[in-house]
Length: 556
Image (cartoon, rainbow, N blue to C red; front, side, top):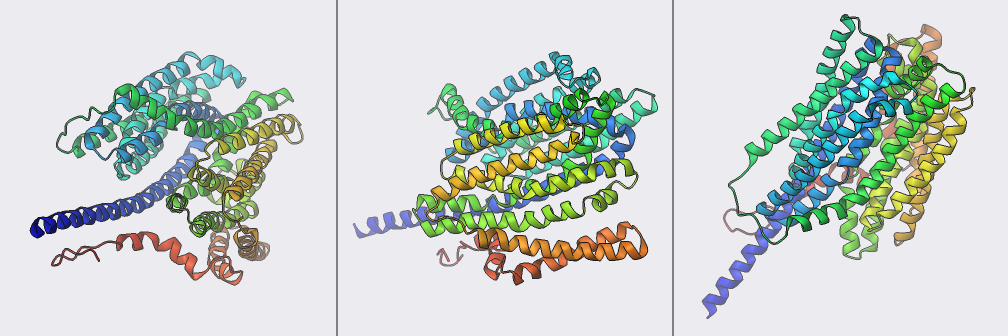
């Protein structure tokens, strides 16, 4: 009897050990996945900036206006089709715990994605002319038609990405994103060059350039399909516990709130586009002038503005599970600590970028686009205003995640809807003022993001056991950022006044600002040694959380 009891105890201990080891492996995969996605986000942003330099020379500001207007329409269709389902897929697959069920979820999801992709592509193709007329330009129709098939390809890619992410494998997603960016860079530039050499009009050259994105997305979908085929393990029986209809219902239940939230963000970009292109023509600017202004804004100013929010969305991700765990454990100290860490990280990363873009907008743009002085001079004031919105945008990302962790997904939806409504009203009147014109776009974006942050943080403080400290979290990073950037700006002015303008002075000044920033953070107590350990140490700690002694089989 004692032997049997001992065998049962050993089995239970072995089972518990395996569970802990698997949990540790999941933690390691999670943090390494975040690192992979962060690196891919940086690479994709760099490729995007590199792409815009020669493309601006080929297309000019007007052609980039046609290209970017088609892209924003595509992005809205893409968000509606793909924003929520990959998240829902990954959640359901990660919770299923069985390979057969994962394959079944993938099969049902792929069917939904194919339907959405085909519908989205057909709508864009059939409605290309009405959509172009919405922008008061028939010339934009060709770019809209060229990008329409991308909706189908991105839907297929999203199904595979959701599958891999549910299994805890982020590398296929990261590689596929880089393939898309490289396709846009090389194929798009090649097609644009061919069209330019053949003597096509600007709108047709833009349409040829758009085909690079379409083909790049197709290649990315093919890569993901091959990856799934290569990485498939031995077949397991399909689980019969849930019907296809039940799986589809569960997918849509999770996907719809995420889709609505993401659609509001994409909708604000479409609002910018339509307001700029329509209102500027209403107050007397020509179609070419409106598209040139929009092309400069979206090619030079917006990409630099979007770098920090893209990084924060990946880097802040590990902090949200910590909050969810603290909420589940009813740990008030853990909830406050996790939320404070997320907000502090967002502010420490975004504030120097925000102030730096505001103060160095023209030198930075001149450094990246040295052969486009007219576009730089027009875009620099726009980037200065957008720079102020970088911190707000990052706080939107973090506060949305915190509210979702508290099970309040509807708060971000209506807060962003409120911000969007304010943006529409402001953009309409500001862009419609001939003296303000396109400057109304970044101003309305800033006030939109500010509104969302105020509402979100109000509810974050409401659900937290104790409110966040504005002094510790906001004012100290602000002081450190302002001191570092102002010091660099003084140096830049001194060099420029004695020697004249030089790209080297911009690089030197930005390097000096980065070098002084960490000491300034220490001086203002914006960051402590414990904070540094939290930023660089979580994955290391997780890596060594569980190890098994080969001789004793004990967990250490």
